[in-house]
Image (cartoon, rainbow, N blue to C red; front, top):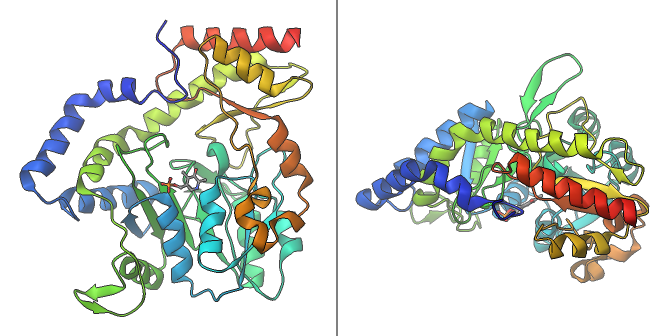
Length: 377
Ligand SMILES: *Cc1c(COP(=O)(O)O)cnc(C)c1O
């Protein structure tokens, strides 16, 4: 059996090595390392794939969120509603820009921000909502957009874990996640569903004015070189990374199917188990399984993690400390938020290996060992 990885980037690279190597060499030969043709091509292809008007490539997913928030002209102290049950980047940029994070609950089934909790958290200072499509499952965007529109709030989708997912509206129409809110942000960190071989990110929007502004912000606030209209930053997607993404984007749907097949295998193996809850799949979106995350009840989670590790099966806790309990947010009153569902989930979730290269033998081994521990403990 091949060694099991949380994410098997080596094996995936072997499958596309010839194309990737050629694309990287083309960039080397052109010496257009910054904003070269590969970057332009990728932006167009991604806009086409997502069916969105503007794609603004940038240096990473965290920058994407920061640039999006900078473009919305938020003032220090303005409130931004976000889940606490997420990767730190979502909430960190809020504090970095001297805005006030308002942490709200997630839905215990989908792991995504709870629209009812958003509604309750809105105050006259609220300016934006940041739903996170956690683990590859979309937040309830139809409800969130309804609330946002009613209160005149911007919506920034954190799509770092769900690129390629489809969101299905009640009327039967659909849209790609990341293109529903005012602005969508994503990351091409190597382990993401569409990952490059270093850092990378992108912002999308259908709003021309915001697109223009975000392009300027990502480029030192300039449109004309050396004439700086506003304070910006330096955030670019390298041509070499774009070249890798140009090879991988056409395979994204196939990669998603491979993840969903692995998830199906896990689901079947754990179906009906009293102590194991498999990931819920809401009917309003296509789960793209960035992570395959179980909820354990009546099983010692750290014991399971250790037991699996001894059998060379990696597992991870995403995330061991929710944002509102991070020291980072102590000065912003993080601990005053009472988030029972978030705390409950934080103690019970565990993510199993999930990537495009998992084979039946590996899946059989992982599930057998998880069940062996669950039935003994
Ligand atoms: C990965 C990730 C980010 C940040 O992306 P980077 O490219 O690592 O900066 C933001 N939000 C979520 C939910 C993520 O998973």
